[in-house]
Image (cartoon, rainbow, N blue to C red):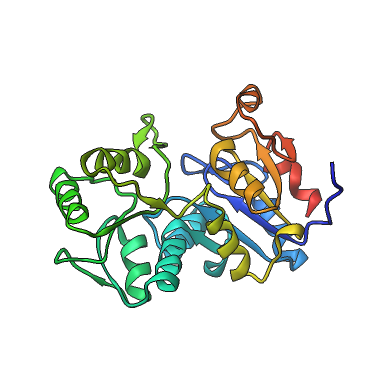
Length: 259
């Protein structure tokens, strides 16, 4: 295996790495504190597009985790940046929450259900049949289909919830059109995040709890990868995949001394 360069910047997933069902994972506060003391650039990433970076900052602060607003990178922000680069000043019909609509407003997009350039699907806890039907008809009429992330389920205290990827599959079945997914495992989200903090993939590491999103995205973006076992992936699960993380550790606490 090629010897990697020392890690000079860190990207980490949020759910399953720093928090689990609204509770900080032991060692997360120490890891973030060490990162800030080191002066190394870092980002906390999430495929969840519900919240704005300011919302997430406040939610994490209430849990005792101090993550600056500028160090939070969501699939909603990555989607907005993608659209601003590809089709600036466009229009969109959006299914999603404030995290996504705010990001689109900030780049100058107009949200409309009248002949939009794009249908953009994000995360929401209130998917409606009416909204999905409208999305199907707009896509059939020529709107291009974008989704913030491919996650099919999301966590809750009561168990799994259907998420963006599952709803996207429904719309795809009804239209025959596949969406372009911006979030992990698309390395685009990682590369735009690295660009945002002025980092380079060969000296960066990605920490995550999922093989199919976090590790795959880090691998495809050319980063060193750390899989933690505090989320959705067990050590036995790793064998099901044709690729491997660079490192496997029990939790974020094991990485405090690596910063």
